Length: 459
Image 1 (cartoon, rainbow, N blue to C red):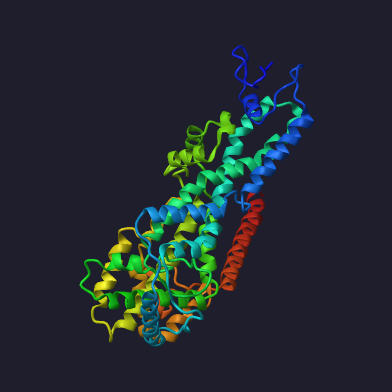
Image 2: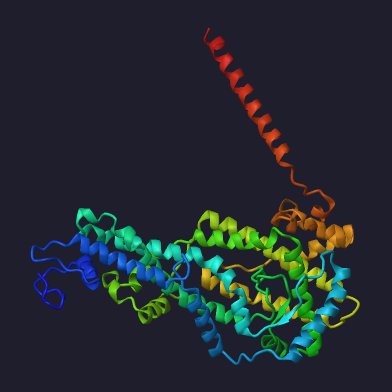
């Protein structure tokens, strides 16, 4: 029996589920039984409140996450609004870049003009893509928390078998609150490092356009013996080339994001780390401040370190696609700058070193989805695209992007000349089916011969 305040008496057994119910404002009556009608009404009220706090099914309030990311980014350094002068410089750089790229690649000029963005604007523009990628993570965290609570459900009366299902909105909201802080911090950190809109290598922008972050470009230029105008032009060439590719090759950007999302769905939450960070018996104390503390405790510990076989395969496909995209950009920009920018090799080497050291893409993907993605084979991909340019010309090289079945594989990167000459040609699906049918037929004949010979031997 409880005292008037609802707190358990010292002589009562420590019942975790009873404590959770008490925190929801539910206590047994004089006969020790719960009022089930009261319980259901109270739970529905709680679930409705939690659902109203979330702006998406994933359990994350994206408005608050966006605001938090901007606040974190503001704390990492000055983020002045772009000036009209910077916008003019970006527009001038794009006009020149377009003239050079028209000769170096077969993809058309972008439909939207280039823009100069602050870090805050980059966060705003890329948030929808982060929502798509990270949604599955929140679901997995909520499921892990649900499993933790499942063990406590045995303390409830049999009539409450659906209690766990009713708690899901609350668990999803709690999972979203925990993950939201990590999300805001990772995106904010990336916003201070990227120099262009899609430097991460994925199409994070809603419209195909070249975007440059002047504040970050200024930091990138420090120590380089290259003029600011040349640095801006070189980065504009890379960003415009990448955006032309994404805009022209309709399957590429969605497939890359889908692979990251698929990888995220396969993530397994480290239940031990989660249990050590959350006292599931104290669900009533999951305040925003408590969620922030839990999220800090789970930094770097949320995901199980072991990858599934499916994740390994996805990672291989992602690394190959990212290497092909960045290698293509390297080759196109090398062609575009060969005659007009003698110092482009300095900038190319600077970006290679930046990439090798683990750039923004590696940091943000590792923080958000536990994906350690490093395009280790960009140089091999660039060599393959260069060989294709020499053999087939610009149009023939870029025609390889027409269908995902045509693009080079990891094995092709090992032997680019074999790929260019056609020696590495993969058999068509029909050929594979025919070969498989032939082998099965031969195996059947062998078994038939063996079976017909056995009786003769017996006789």
